[in-house]
Amino acid sequence: MWVTSSDRSISPLSTTDIPRPDTGATPTARPSRRRPGTSLGGLALRLHFYAGLFVAPFILIAALTGALYAIAPTVESVLNHDLLHVDSTGPARPLADQITAATATQPRLVLAAVDPAQHPGDTTRVLFTDPSLGESEQRAVFVDPATARPVGTSVVYGSTGALPLRTWIDQLHRNLHLGEFGRLYSELAASWLWIVALAGLVLWLRRARGLRLLWPDRSGSSRGRTRNWHATVGVWVLLPALFLSATGMTWSTYAGAHVDQLRQDLSWTTPAVNTKLTFGPASGGTAGEHAQHTGHGAAQPLPSTPERAAQIEAVVATARGAGLSGPLEVTVPAESGVAYVAKERRLSYVWTQDSVAVDGATGTVTDRLRFEDWPLMARLSSWGIQLHMGMLFGPANQLLLLVTMIALVTVIGRGYLLWWRRRPTGAFTGGRAPRRGQLRRTPPILAVPVVVTAAVVGWFVPLVGISLLVFLVVDVTIGLLSRRTPDIAG
Image (spheres, rainbow, N blue to C red):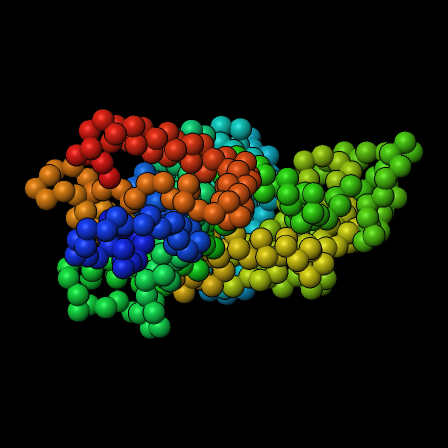
């Protein structure tokens, strides 16, 4: 909600608005000449008003929960220091010993992955599949590399291995802990944020000039100062808001499905290494251009826990030799004939996600995928996700998101203040809406593209389309009521 109407008319004062002396002559009716830009500006004003009034509460909640999520990684590292870091000194014990010690604490669970300690003082994570946990959750045992002793156990979530506090904040931001139904709130906020922001920018460009676009004029009335701060702060956070809106929609239910389909149609999906080690005669497939198959025929029995621990250690050594220098996660195959996958983790300051598939029996690389070989849009998507989550640039990234969310909250607050101040004097109702009938006043050469664009956006982003129809019903209802009771006309 960047700019709320502070004028009852968006058209400039013309000479026909100035009272003239009565000369007794019958005035000649002049055709109304309205500049196209004026009509489009009025349309942007009305759209900005209704979207700001009804959708801004959802954007406000998303901003507040987003501010919490922005600082969640830092808070997590402080509150869970004893799990993530150790004070032990000395050389690390073999990774196989660390894995064996962790599996001994979870004898009934299936080993799923291992995240070796990246730096001295970090703990190694040994991850297990636990049927009692939710989707994307695993049980992690944290091991001191120097002593090969477990220091604690916790549930981790997602590709970043979020601990319970960050997971709770993540779900609060995503769906308010209301499940799939709650995701509609965040999708509505993300879907409308870019529209409200761009409509507000159009309105502010029509009013402000030069540096006034970026710095408020504080010399006017109280309402004028509020409007100027509302608009200029909106310009300051415009680019981050557009970015957060675009990346937020990729996680949504309905718009996200269209984004996924579009990425698939344009071959922008994230690639993955081929993990299959054996191919039957009827398969007719290959492992891709990187594959170097080992030629196993029949399926082999799964190795024992000590054997797997030794294989994982060998896989890590192979991955390091293949050039994967970042923090690793080794995925353990759950069945025979499948390779281990060593992949760089999505953590702060990690720009690449190279991965290799390794035959655990021989320690040879069977497939390799470099991040530079990903499609450009897949790479941009990966960086965008990390930036949205506050993980790409570490604390600096989190601080930028926090400041953006705080600024967005002030923009929304000032927008509602402007709306309240437009109410009739002495009334307890809300502020008046901008002038009606803007679409009818827009020339067809501009109105038709506007309607077509709205239809396309409404289809691709369904919650925008549905809410636009709701706004239209509300607007028509207000118009009908205003004809009967002119005093409440907006």
